[in-house]
Image (cartoon, rainbow over all chains, first blue to last red; front, side, top):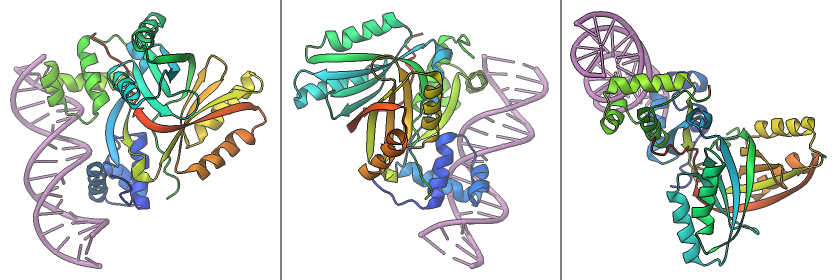
Amino acid sequence: MPSADLDHLDRAILSRLQEDSRMIAESIGAHVGLSAAAVQRRIKRLREAGVIAREVAVVDPKSVGIDMTFVVTVEMERERIEVLDAFRKQVQADPAVQQCYYVTGSADFVLVVNCSDMTEFEAFTRRMFFDNGEVRHFTTSVVMDRVKVGLSIPLNGR
Amino acid sequence: MPSADLDHLDRAILSRLQEDSRMIAESIGAHVGLSAAAVQRRIKRLREAGVIAREVAVVDPKSVGIDMTFVVTVEMERERIEVLDAFRKQVQADPAVQQCYYVTGSADFVLVVNCSDMTEFEAFTRRMFFDNGEVRHFTTSVVMDRVKVGLSIPLNGR
DNA sequence: ACTGAAACTTTCGCCGT
DNA sequence: ACGGCGAAAGTTTCAGT
């Protein structure tokens, strides 16, 4: 799945699709200088190759009553594979966790967590950290402004 | 645009579209117990109300030669509105920055940054931090594993 | 809210470069 | 092998019931 070689046309198409996956092929073609059919073919190929991993709707959190976002760092008691994997699984299963990264440095994991309010977040910390004997320490940062949120990959020039 | 009241059917539809925005209305309808037309109408309404903020393609970083992700915390010299807003703008304009949160706590900002390699990341730190007199301190964590990555909002029960 | 028809988008086959 | 063209298939949109 790595590096299915892409030319600058593929990158131009991906760039558009990262902004708006509903942009129709004809419109993309007009911008990149290709017929609609050619664009479709490339998109199909990109999907099958896994270059386009998924296509998703981004929901406005406020609209569904999610008001709070948190950035949480987690330090585990012991860095044993078993412990880490168990935590990974727990994180993946918990819908409040939007993102989780396993990182170098003093912390082991960095989490982005969504909750409707503080009460819910407290419930989250309880089930995720306090009930887990392997969590040595965690820190919480409350997000005051979601300055930039996306999953766009830089597709520089070519 | 906040809290356009949604019933459990809307939430069920959103839940599907967060996983796969290309799922056709008929298939969604079969799962939630609604005709295709009814699903279509609700989706249209959700888009117009901004509940569905955008629909995007998620590109696999490896496929386009992006191998490295970083979590960076940033502390500004002075927390003046002007300084913070300038940094916000800089962040929004920089394609290497995938996400940026303004947070409480010792750090001011948390960034998720994508680069093809360390050299590119060093260039990034230079233009974003060293060339900016207002940045007091920053810390870098290298992401070893992207355990969970998405923008999905929890749409629990109802 | 469902049905059917019209409009639109994507997909496929074929040919030319 | 890849792009363009035109026809077929699939999806969404809209009107009428």
